[in-house]
Length: 115
Image (spheres, rainbow, N blue to C red):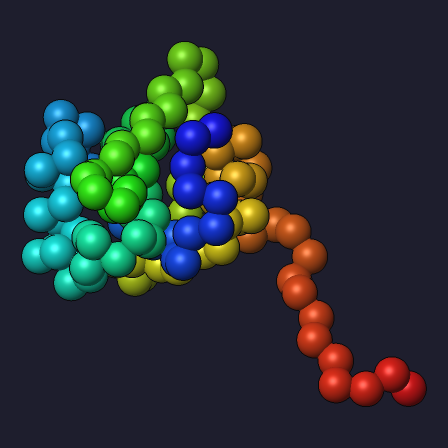
């Protein structure tokens, strides 16, 4: 996969995105509809209505880059939530692209002391 190894954040644009949009259209969506900075280095992830195509837009040092994955037979387990945009981690993005439900893994636990 040719995505940044350590993105700052991964934003999922929930709902359906018109996959005819290319870099210009998606970057305008990020800025105007999502209210986010497309030049931040974050990953912005979009999915079509049939859940068979995912596009990932990001700023790569001196220009926008876009990564696309199209499934021939199956569907991505795209989340449905009342929010328009949700944040996930890089590992959760890997699960999503692999066809897994990004929420089904064990939750991370944090302790301050060993008992």
